[in-house]
Length: 193
Image 1 (spheres, rainbow, N blue to C red):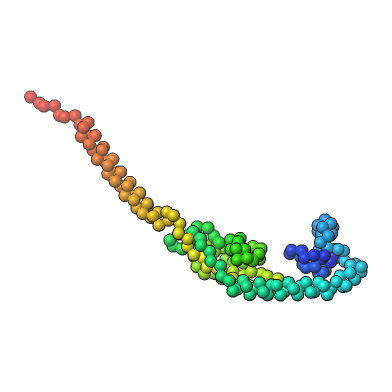
Image 2 (image 1 turned 120 degrees about the vertical axis):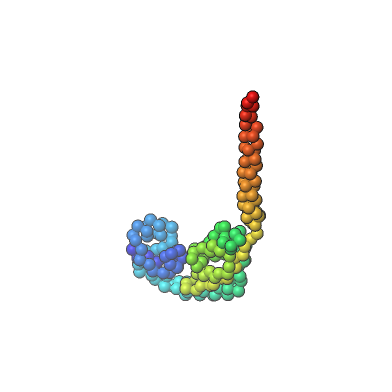
């Protein structure tokens, strides 16, 4: 079924776009929610009269997107994440984490629009994430992932070493105890007369 969109619909199109969609999708979702109208002469004429207004809105979105791109590319995101001594992160950096960091800078970006190379970041370092803005515009954001000091991470090796040393000490003590008990339990040989 051919429809004209009344508003921007995610993953379908923008206001004024003519789209060919499944009949059920149009009748059960788009039309009842007033997201689209059926394609006919009357609706085409109505949208032709609003064409300048729609184009002005699209142009404004392009300008907003261009300024957002400049601001995002000028800013750098620094994330302090818990990591092991070798630089491997305990928790991966996902698009959701990056979206939250961008929100702290004052920009609202959906996590679906953020593309991280390899889909997640698993180690400390510098990375670039691509953010898909309006139409074909994209912005590259620099992400610096740094290791956060985790309590107990450095002494963990010492604990392992001390645990091994403790086990060795305990095993020596248990051998000494066993030997001393064996000496006590030995029956003295009878004296022969």
